[in-house]
Image (cartoon, rainbow, N blue to C red; front, side, top):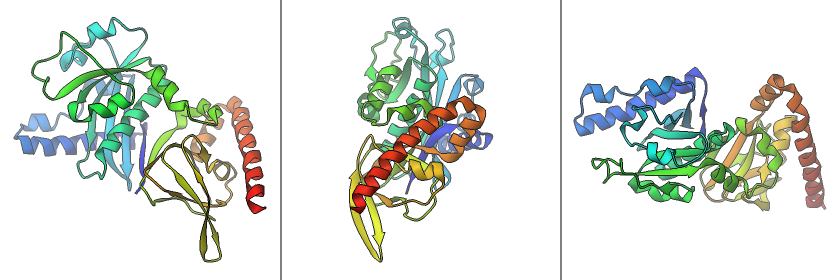
Length: 313
């Protein structure tokens, strides 16, 4: 079943983040025999910082994971309570963020994948916000995941002996991450609108788009393979396969026309997603950008019509 990962902006989404933290900490507290004070510590003063970003993952409308990022202030004793990044921060240029308060429900079918894409969603937003670096105190069982995203391990004299067995401090260049993320994207013009992006994860065999239905979402495939299928009579015919870096469904999203084909995930597939309502809101709030949007989708519509004509032949 599809899982959506987005930046929590509304009061409803932020409430879901706090409830998820509470549920997970309560379960952990009961197992560890912790006090009620520990189990109720789901919000702290970082949550009300103006530069705090929360991210939440939904499956069937229920929150299953969340992650917080806060702009790093080397003089904040609270941020340095778990791990002191001040020496590292003094050796790098630009603004940095601290990733923390990661929570994933144990019942989720693939928690490692969810963990990975919560981190990626956070770094994508931080890149758009102009953040240069990100720190993270990483649980050691998933260190290879963050290293695959470009994080490097840190050696810092302030590293706590108490935590040494369980976590590893890491850092990443957000700029380098975003450059690597976008390297395979064919239609790079769409990156001008990354503030409306969110992630969607599809499992193998899951139907992403149904032929004949009206579509409101477009997908930019980041990982995986998608089968393009046409319904002829009662027969399903596979006509092509789409891979990483390609965009799908954007014409129907803009025109509100019906989908011309069905799309089925052939393997675990992760997409950068964007919805019509977000584009419409963007054009309403910033009408000068509507020209850029129409230029991009006019180009895509022309290319799609050519491909469709070729397929008909």
